[in-house]
Image 1 (cartoon, rainbow, N blue to C red):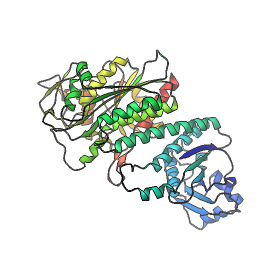
Image 2: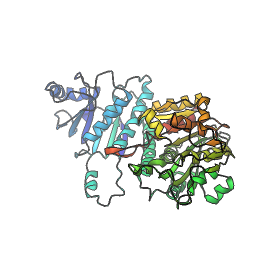
Image 3: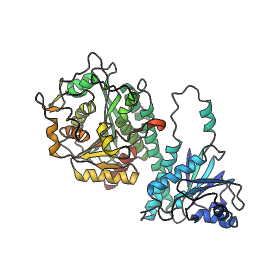
Image 4: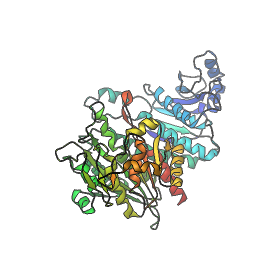
Length: 506
């Protein structure tokens, strides 16, 4: 997909198609009104006949409209005038792309970035936001994962249809350079999201810990990052007994992947992102039920989101110091696998009684979080598909957010609102900590059914006392099940927006 920024009158464009908005009242957006005027009221007549109601996401494709130079005009419903929210704006954009997906309209001009969005006060900033969101929404709608399919005839044929060039038209009063900058940022976030999706969607016999390490190492040449991969023996020397305990049941060697994006000042303390990289989770000896176990290939989506975020910030040349730490392994029920009742010694020196081997994510993260101390971070954020309890609590719309510092939590919440990749602040109170008490070790790895996502975060908090820390539980948001099964690429948009805010402050 090729994107560009332009300004001009909708009726003058000589594209395969021009996209304009229509409201439920029958009122036309500014660009739709321009076409209507040049066509002597043709669009108004179409609406009066009832061929389109203007409801959000509805579309009507018109051919050879007299007075318009484009071959087609696509009307897109914007809902009630004055009520177009940020999320509704994305929905309208996606509807426009889907409507043209099986047509011969390849070169398209969209005027949807001109419409008013609810709660948009700063016009220049909002224009840039609308451009970036359009790019992200379009790429999200066009994303396909078919690299593992042998027969691609139909897919190849479909690829010749639909949009290949998209001109995003902004009002002449808008800052054109700001829009171009937003385009670059939208493309960077889209690239990061797509990368994270690809990694999540790959089968576990392909996307192993070694494969994740190879993808990180490839970013040295493509994105100028510094990457180091620690092997089992190096982790043993560091005392990562908890991480290696999980890995010992698998034939796949574990990897500790460390990425560095050092584009800030030399004395600037880095932000550290820690991503859970369980490339397949059987539950270990505490074996999971067979139904939907295939979806446990998504248990590395935390790692994928870190790699996707690094891709995005590298393409933006973000002036910030950022470190990525990814503990990657499988959780398998081999004869060497850890058992319920085993006691592991973490890198921090704290001992852990394993009561359930399916609570393995926290066992690999705790050593990675201790390792993060060496970077003297300004903040550490871990991202993990950690608990089914978080899905019960929040469903599939918001990621769970826990933090030992309210200011950091507020930063992440604000970034999620801006990026339309929301999180919800969950409690991390001392009252929950006793649920992790153990008679035989310093800490148990589970705290019972009650408040499961909270006690999991409480477990991690015991390894993060030396810095400001936040935990994102993405078990409900990292992938979709059912007919739309696939990785979402979340929370790459949230993390990227958070880092952009940090870079602006720096």
